[in-house]
Length: 360
Image (cartoon, rainbow, N blue to C red; front, side, top):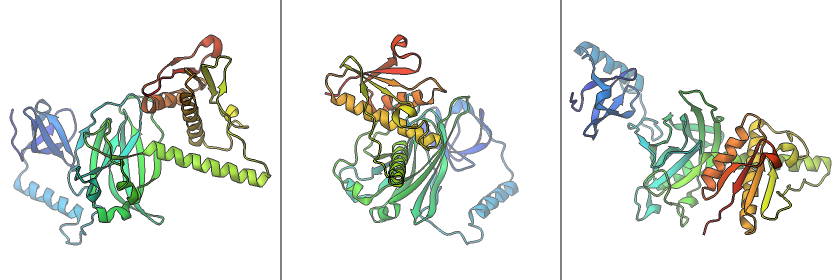
């Protein structure tokens, strides 16, 4: 069954109707649903919708205009309108192995002269979970939301276009992320963090680089890395303040402990081994962020020593969350290294051995 542009259709495997707005290929249509999203849908998953009478159609249009403010004439045009145009889910070039988080990417419209702008803003979901995302401009302590919507797993959405003259207004972006899945799984924690998007970053040489997600150069900002840095900054400030109050010198970082064999380094990621307390007065997300920062520090130090060939991270068994985050860091930041369960005889359960390989 063939459909033409403008035909009303029903989704065979989903609830609701939509309108055919174009073709993706010979067997796939682009269908705009009731929320204004364009969804690529195979022909075999579409059915003709029951035609509405003229009166019903007119009433539906009237309600739609009324909801958007168009009928009263009081609607105000805003450059921050979230759905100023339909937003298409763009599949990523590579699929994520495990959760590697969310990114905000700025794509120069003029590839040959990127600094002249304008810049397309992409929300990139490089994870195996769908998520709801809100993006807002911060003005003092006030937030002006310019995007709110769903981003599918391993997909990206272009949400806005920002001109060079507007960059100053977007130097502080606040993003909130809520992950979800239709199948039972352990979900990542919600994320809420402010991203620093200073105009200077757009003119710095090498800011726009190739990436594994979209076939274009991007200035890429990682939400998870930014959140981790903010938590660590807060942790350091807290510990310094405590040290001042107690008139004690700040505790020295615990370096990875070399084993009897020079070619192997061991780091214990339990909080009592990293600090002088089991919790150091931190919340669960802050403890996790601190443990992961210490693991990354140990990885960098081990890779800098040519004689070190292996790193063993002792993370314990628990609910598996710390090990899962360690593995995600290895997949994302150290893909040249391989990993496996460490020797049970030497380390018991709950340890991962990383076989170090260095970039040439």
